[in-house]
Length: 427
Ligand SMILES: Cc1ncc(COP(=O)(O)O)c(C=O)c1O
Image (cartoon, rainbow, N blue to C red):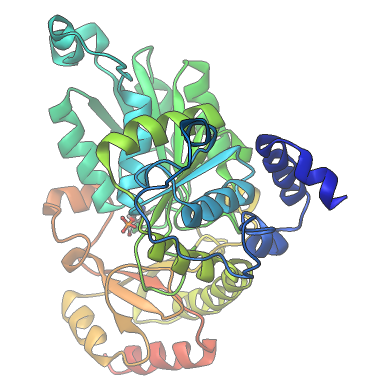
């Protein structure tokens, strides 16, 4: 059987492998997809780090036949990760890149901008949509999201001739009103950073598809272990691999998952020219981390549920927002589109003085930006990731001056609750 398989052309062997991975359970996919059997040329159990920029061949025929050419567009270590991410998301193809922000920007560009193959100088002016008011591409997005994405969409894209419309994506009438025939993209982040808003992916993607646009979902706060946006109607998914997917807080990475044709364009046009490439070493770290994603997300979710319930009833806590609590305004949507509720909690105390004191009293829970780690991390939103926002922007995003974002890690839940209780009781 092995011999017969070896006789098949490479593309057919790849398709067979992909079909095999698709049939596996999620935890088996985490371990095997993209890596079994891998690589075809050695017997290494683990995917090696291919530290190379070029690939060399004996003849031009061989070079043309082989898809490895230059590491800005393909590398065997990244190939394993790309295949695994595509399988986990039930997508046709995946592309890992240097960071979550790189993934967001490349995915958005691929939808918002024209791909220009060969440019004649006299056609350059056609590319500035500012000159053609009827051709301004429009992006519709939620009023609040990760500050990096907010800045990109609010401050940078309008300078590139793209119009941004920010609405409350929880209000479907508002979404419908914001979408017109020039709206090319609906960008969703769910759960949304830092307020843990939950957006209905199925309902929103239907609205944009009815108008001929595309839907991108940033799935970073869920990971494919608990939410698969492509199965809910999204056209492209982006992930910050820096967070849950790697899970160990030791490198940055990002990914885009979606249809083969779009991903080919993003890889060989947008990534090739913009160059936000993931290093093979970081791909290897992420491959190592991802094997345990399923187990980790279960523990993140159960720890977070216990902690959210504790915070919800503590009189020093003003509000607690967690999708697993019935009090979350979109709890029913979360139940519908997520397998579990994840590890992210938003909460507020009563005063700024108490916030400052609270931070200093924590011991086990570390104060720092980022999330999705084995270690619990807390941020005081207005002074950390929210520092670049004007106070009116924070208000419009429902980020109060007493807001905290807690990324619940994998420690014993009792130790985390003891830490929070100790600090809260001293306020
Ligand atoms: C939802 C979300 N998307 C994207 C990013 C950016 O990811 P990266 O830091 O890998 O660029 C973050 C970072 O916190 C995030 O929370």
